[in-house]
Length: 218
Image 1 (cartoon, rainbow, N blue to C red):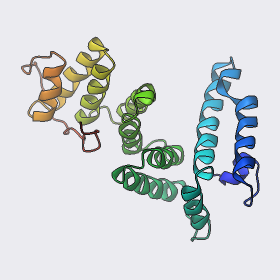
Image 2 (image 1 turned 180 degrees about the horizontal axis):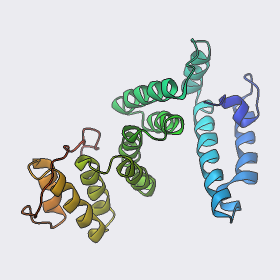
Image 3 (image 1 turned 180 degrees about the vertical axis):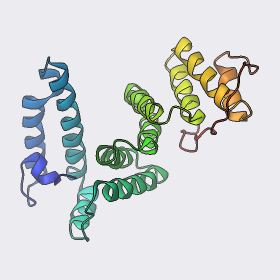
């Protein structure tokens, strides 16, 4: 994981004002919207997510203190170690209802271990709690499904997000897939019913359950 101070181009003693100015300059010069080439735009999006995580961490006094303390701890040497640590701390932040902190940490986990479906799923569940982040939540969950296509829980969660966004046809498709993978899971059947899918589908296959413990309660 890159050093947040280096990412923003400021020193470890930078003031809050210095950090805001540095982030504003990066946003002006390297925002993804400035790129038209698809490959460059995708790279810019990944870079800007990391820069935004750095800014959110360093612009908040509490999270900056925690980050500075972490710099003094023994270094995690591999992406897998960094990802696992960030994922665990992200889930703790989510349980503590620190949504922004959770999202930032889970993005770090995904960045370091992009092939781990669980990390994309956890990020999606955190993002899903914010009405403004539904699109990114769907994208993260779709990535989790791409990595773990037989996970019925992921597909049922995606159906729920589609229903929330009024995308009934896409919700139905994912609900049908989840039901075929886990026809006996009552939570999958509940989502299927909400999507208007009959529980009696042909050729059911064995699959996993619905991982919805992070869904925001009403």
